[in-house]
Image (cartoon, rainbow, N blue to C red):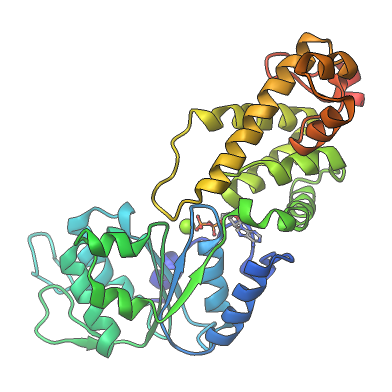
Length: 353
Ligand SMILES: Nc1ncnc2c1ncn2[C@@H]1O[C@H](COP(=O)(O)OP(=O)(O)O)[C@@H](O)[C@H]1O
Ligand SMILES: [Mg+2]
């Protein structure tokens, strides 16, 4: 097959090179790293599960980079992005005359991934017919181009990713259980960013350095206050959201803009839908909601009292010390200058603070 057709399919990599994945200090990531090192060199299928933006793509590329076939192709297929009818020919290829318009034959992505990694993203979206073809591929390395008489054989490492609980899909009858067992030989669970808040400083400093370099900027290290806010925010978009926030900070150069933005995003929390796709921790959710409510009330009272904290404490019927503690805990800035109201652009003095 032509080298160019392979390279055009080798996905344009995300911005961050996979060898620079930041693991941080959290136990979840330490365990993940250990598992990765163990499985990368063995040609077994891997299933990566986790919310959107937690790093499933980058980890899939890292697995490829650590595998014996690292010099081979890395071929990604984003299952929902290709309409159902096209997906079969994209994946498995076709022979001349297989269907109207098949004037020549064409290899599928499975074939292009020979001696490399086939990364199937959002695997839950695969329809039943394709699920059985994939099952065959995983069982004996064989598949059939559309319209072909004979099966072909390939050697590929299959890595799948999903942001859904496949167990639920199996129960609903939309995902084959036997396929699940085949793709789930090794399971990697990507933790949500809110569950690894202790890794945020390492991620922030990595993105800061990366984008300062990329855009030739000199954005400063974040203040402790803002870092505290970042560690308390619930990050529905996970690392992708954090990366974009830091990118914006590097370009804009001041903390005020992103502080205001963060406060706005938190406001949306109550109006947003509660994810019920994965396991829910009612306790955690309640704690988060209570803290968010406290933050809202305290902010309102501080504003009403022109940021006078003694008066605010009285208005809230709590001690001055308790208020200071809560301000810190909820990630609110300690004074007005540091709080850039979302409605009003930061003033010179606020920006200089
Ligand atoms: N551990 C990490 N270290 C550095 N960058 C990361 C890390 N995890 C994710 N990223 C970056 O965050 C963004 C989202 O990651 P991605 O792998 O696309 O997530 P997912 O596939 O789970 O949606 C990408 O730009 C990626 O490079
Ligand atoms: Mg992805």
